[in-house]
Image 1 (cartoon, rainbow, N blue to C red):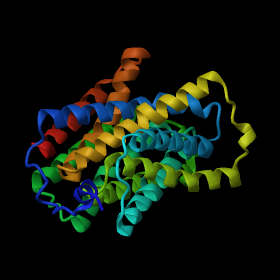
Image 2 (tube, rainbow, N blue to C red):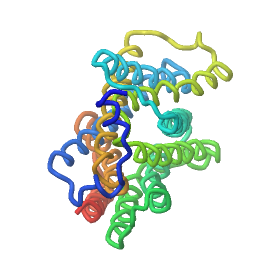
Image 3 (tube, rainbow, N blue to C red):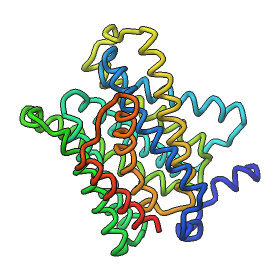
Length: 308
């Protein structure tokens, strides 16, 4: 085994690589990740008009995986050697990608934006509980208060999105959202466990490829491949979503997990729906209501409590 492979796969102690404070570079990358994830919403809405949800989710994952593995192979990045690391990558693929993407795409058009935003943003709270038991991350009083403030801030920003559709959404749509949130939370735990032990490009690329396989199987079973409308708009949405909205932010996220606590980083996930609201206000002339502004302020204060 080469020296590089030994360096990449050497297990690291959890506390040894955890920084007490986030640097300005960390904060800038976190803002970029959340902004890119926020841009996914209009791209997903555009793509779903041309493709069934499971096929679209599988194609998004495949594009992201190929987009990461091509440069990884070209640059001769090392493959993971240990079976437990491959099991970790597979676990990330099945949870973060398969369950997370399936829940997200199946809920589109079934659950209103307000309810979807609230349920999806349970993910940082779920991950914080799992991180306490599985990663040994202590949730201090200020951090817990900050997490709850961030979540209730999102509830306030989502209130105008609640409507009559909530009554007819049923438990299936809400179940899809909860499935996606659980999948992402478990996936983040597994990502944190293997961070620093595998090459980032290889790990994130392969988890997307492995995670796309169940999505493809489900799409083949429940949907028709011929129903995908391969027009120029769909192709561009898929390409931008797969590379810019999926591959790049998860690669940066995985890199950030190597040196900071998951709970601290995950609190910034509350920025994603906030960025989506701001984008809608700037580019689609949607006016922010005072309760949404109050919710944004509350979420930002909560994130500050956790990150400081």
